[in-house]
Image (tube, rainbow, N blue to C red; front, side):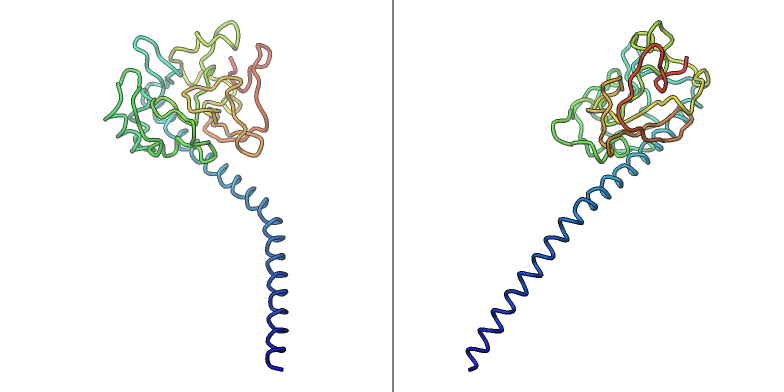
Amino acid sequence: MNGYTFKRRFHFTLIELLIVVSVIVILIGILLPALQKAKQEAHKIVCKNNLRQIGFMVVEYVNDNNGTMCPYVALSPTRYWPVCFQDYLAAIAPKWRLSAMNGISTEDGTGIWDRKTWGPLSCPSAPTSGTSETNLNNMDYGINTYIGWCGSSVQDASTAQKYYRFHNITRSSEVFIFADVAWPIYRLLPGSQTLRHNGGFNLLYCDSHVGWNKGYISATVNNILPWNSY
């Protein structure tokens, strides 16, 4: 009698356990997409905050240089924007600055470094595998190549390789200066954007506000916003 009762109770408990496990699996299947979406949204918020910190750096640089902003690359000698911003990057990415002081040439910024030093220069949604870790100029945020453009076409990057007055940029709330870039590199071109935030990407505009754009942004001679407003 006791043996029979024990077997019945054990059999019932096993069925109950299987039901509970099945319910848990179903709930996980329902909640997992929502959790993934929440994680992506959190990464998007962190990325926006990174760009805001970069924006503070830009404001300080411009104020200290008579309203002048550096281009994505200055020639003779070649100096990419991360090198121009070295002293200002120290405030938001001190470990990066330390790497810059100890392992690169101050002329071109090349050297071996650790991605963990990027700090706010690293987007949490950017892939960490297959990225370049041998050039201090390459980061997850690229500077707008055409922001100083005054040439004959928006594709003419050669005219962007110069310093320019920040106040000459009209419609500053519509022209961006930094944004998510598809792979670690110092500049952003049409086609090098990446949709790593819910089908869009984050942008830092010239008036220091940060926005999100759904889809890619093209650039033509007749439609240069938000690349430039000249």
